[in-house]
View 1 (cartoon, rainbow, N blue to C red):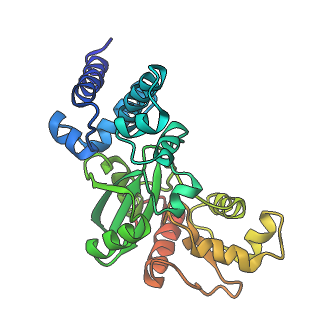
View 2: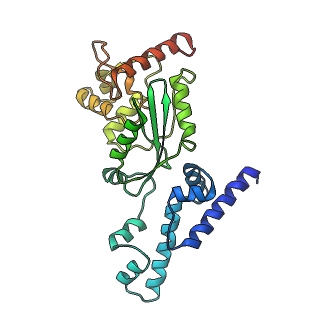
View 3: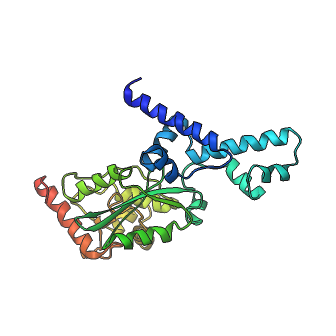
Amino acid sequence: MNPESSERADLVADICAYLQEIHPESASLGELGRRFHVSPFHLQRTFKAATGITPRQFSDKLRMEDFKTLVRRGQRITDAIHAVGYGSSSRLYERSDENLGMTPSTYKRRGAGTTIFYSVVACPLGFLLVAATDRGICKISLGDSAAELITDLEAEFAAAERIRDDDGVGFWTERIIAYLEGWQPDLNLPLDLRATAFQVKVWQQLQKIPVGETRNYSEIAAAIGQPTAVRAVANACAKNPAALVIPCHRIIRKDKSLGGYRWGIERKRALLAREQAYKETGDAP
């Protein structure tokens, strides 16, 4: 085992030992990050890579084992539920059949039970926010201020645990900044998005548009085999949660005018100009 792998294994072992020590209490990712002097995002990814579950799920597993032990010993289910700290039977069943990642119902509940890491940095188009679950990026947005973007994230995922982690999410923000500065022609980053089957088809088609080229709504509708769904395509583009990685800025109107853009028409104009310059010269704009 190389030194780096050994260090990761030691970290995971220490986290497990600590969670067992404080059991039945649990600790937030922020608390664990401070205790073990690592980025919460890095801590979560390292722990999950080693164990297949998150630290919170590990704590839930310990609690579930306590519950099963009490029931096996003859305690009534209702009493056992409260004895191990579940507020109600619904909390027990929610934990016992928990899915990894953000399910549609979780998104509908504004991220309840989900941890979202995020970073906000200055970029060539103002400010950039990148937010991610332990599965991938769930939101990328552009705006005029960091406060504006954070407020929008808080509204969309009001019930989630949100942790600002500039170091942990930094790898992805750096890739996006490089793209905006023209040093990286395109983006291929992991996504964790909730969408309808139709939206997924549209967004995947958008990702096929080459750098420096554009399409109109009718062309996308035809490409996904639903030529009459032009309005629905436009709606899917408007609801794109991941700016740049899903390049809805490459969609223009049939008359070649720019049309709208969720993050501002001037940003769309600047993005298309940068990509056109890259296509023509292969150099940073």
